[in-house]
Image 1: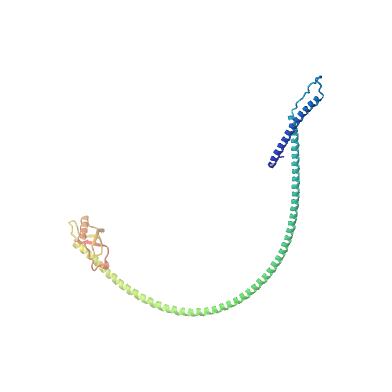
Image 2 (image 1 turned 60 degrees about the vertical axis):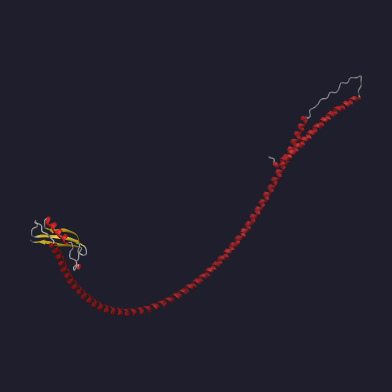
Length: 318
């Protein structure tokens, strides 16, 4: 068995005291042996006779160290055995104390468990009783609520029936009012339709008269414009013809379409021979030269029929 650290200084002091006792015992034993030898010498001198030769006593010196060491070992073994017995006894007492404590603890735990079981049983009984009371209260409350709900439902049905009757009466009155309003509206609509029909017929007659007037005016304008445009184109053709210099290769019966591009004011910016044209190339170039010499086409008085691009027919009959 292991010795705790707190017992080691005591053991060292015990060993030291044992060693000191053994040393003192050895010294005392040696002194005793020497004293015994001296005593024996003194006793021998008391019977000394000169004539007799007495052999001197022989002394044997004994080494006490082995006895001292054996004694010390014996005492040390006894001390160690006593300490081992003490430790064993202490362990036994400690184990017995621990066993008693465990038994007491076990008894306490059993008592606590028993008390806890009894307490749980009491709590369970109280809980069951509380559940019964709560169930009874819940049932009573549900019954009361059901009665209250039934009363409210009855009241709601009565209120709904009264409301339905009022709504039916209101609906009947509204239908009667709507019927009267519909009849009045139909009468007004008939009057409005008749009035609208008269107005529409009058408007259609006015529109027809206006369309006829506009058509006459447009026809007159188109006629005037067509005459003005024909006059405009003829004036351009005549102006080009006055500026044309006939080449020797030109024959009678020349017919050429000429395209002229101008800007407001009559200034020519482009000219070209278009189709059809039966003139030769020299005659075509001479016609274009006549357009260039004209320079500016008639504009004043022809603003309404002005066109950016004009195509006219150049004619030469000889």
